[in-house]
Length: 302
Image (cartoon, rainbow, N blue to C red; front, top):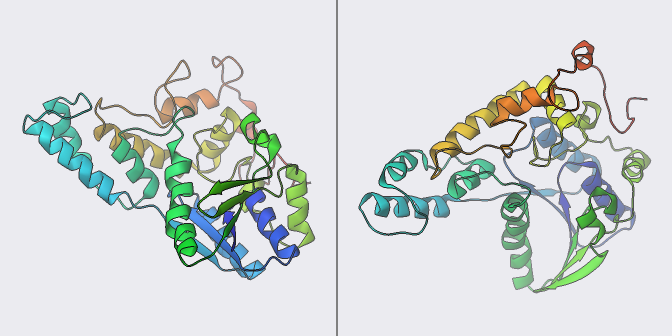
């Protein structure tokens, strides 16, 4: 069984188009909804499914059991029992009030963990995508006797870590990872879209260099400013999530981005994103830009 993982971005869409171009048999496409996507990406997934004619299976992580177990631990702390984690009774009482299932995978994951993922603790991809696809789709198919080839839209020039990945590797349990566009460039991926008459995600023409989570924990300065300028409602959502996760955490404080000299919390990071190099003076040039105009770091507006 050939399974293509779809994110809504250019790389995964190009991978699906390549599989179709090669007339791959037993083809499935799967989208793991993290709960931290822009509505435009959800719309694009539906468009892609209709355009290419391949059903895309939507999966979503469920952390209700983990959150319930956390609540039980907090009850034990409140009752005076000894549990791991160095919780005080006061912090446990506060956290218990806010440790509840919301139904949003990303937010529930952070409420359970009591923190947001980071570059050093990137549990988001594992918990929200890899594990979900493995346990909800791939392993059940293996139990039915299928061998799985997992098509992944991973490119070497995305990062040093991804550059080290092999084009193919058998991870056991009947699953083989396959990265057919590993040597491709971003332009190659867009060319594949245009070759098959498939539009790329509209976010690429709205200043986004990265499509998927909005924002991603790896979001750079320019991307954060673009998000704040074009999609302020997403910043407000993150601000609310910071309050909710902080309230459910042991220390009572948790921020989406790592706190450092740039600032603490999403509001301060957005202000930092508006500054020039050095972070002390505001960059006024973007203020004159038309936020409704086409803007693409990949030259898609030309």
